Length: 127
Image 1 (cartoon, one colour):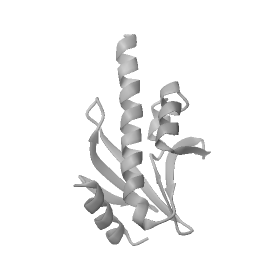
Image 2 (cartoon, helix red, strand yellow; image 1 turned 90 degrees about the horizontal axis):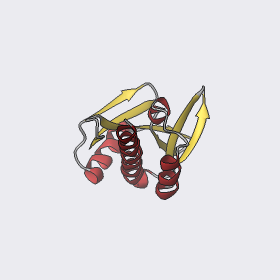
Image 3 (tube, helix red, strand yellow; image 1 turned 30 degrees about the vertical axis):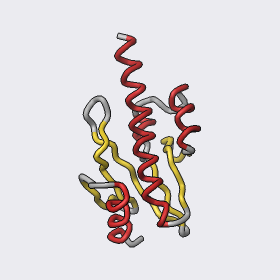
Image 4 (spheres, helix red, strand yellow; image 1 turned 45 degrees about the vertical axis):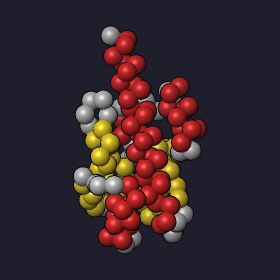
C-alpha cells in the first residue's frame, strides 16, 4: 500500500488530519472529529487484494454498542457492515478504489462519532 499517496489524497479530501501512523498492516487515521467525551475518532485502513477496508478496529465493540438499536439504524443509513474475527467485532466500510477511500474514511468516522455520541447521551440520561 502506498501510504504516502493514500494519506495525501485523504488529507486533501477530508481536511487536516491530526495524526496518521502505521500500525502493523494497518494505517490509523486520527480524525479531527470528537465524541462528547472529547475523544478523537480514529479509523483504520487495511488493503487486501486491491480492496481497501476502513474500519473501527473493534473500538465500538469494546464499548458495548454493537447491535444496539441506534447502531443498527445508523449502520443501515451509512451503509457500513460488521464482521466478527478473533472474538472482536469490527465495523467496516469497503471501497474497491483508492479514489473513493476519502469518502469511506469520512463516512466511517462520522458513523463512529454518531453511534458513540448517541450511546453517551443514553447512558447520561439513564443516570
